[in-house]
Length: 189
Image 1 (cartoon, rainbow, N blue to C red):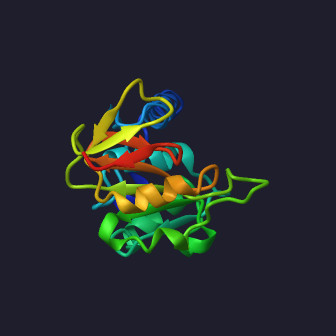
Image 2 (cartoon, helix red, strand yellow; image 1 turned 90 degrees about the vertical axis):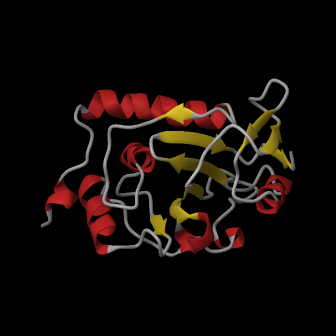
């Protein structure tokens, strides 16, 4: 087994996971607000924020889809060792990880059902830049409006139209983390 498979987990798992969980909840409950999330290191190109999300939110019962940009033996081994999460195709994924251009169409992921809208995919999108500028966000958790540097506008508007079904998103860049729940309205700035 390679060294990068065994390393990169939380130094203090219970405390670090609690901090990461709080940051993850805060990011989704306050769309457009950028959190700092570090303490985990997966093989490249996984960012520290994405690695911390995987360690905190995934386990042996949460199938993960890896986009081609992140589907490497090193990342598969790291996920298997640290979380036990199975790698799956998009239509069975509870979580997905990858760069925006490498992810399949959003329609390929489960959006939940009328009885179980929570049975949808949460997508972790790795970005080169994550700032509080760009697309205009309104809706629950936002006092008036917020802005976020999203990779596109139309897919998130279409996702919002599915509410209460739909996908939830985390955006990561280095140790920066932002969330975009399905309930958020997205418009051009």
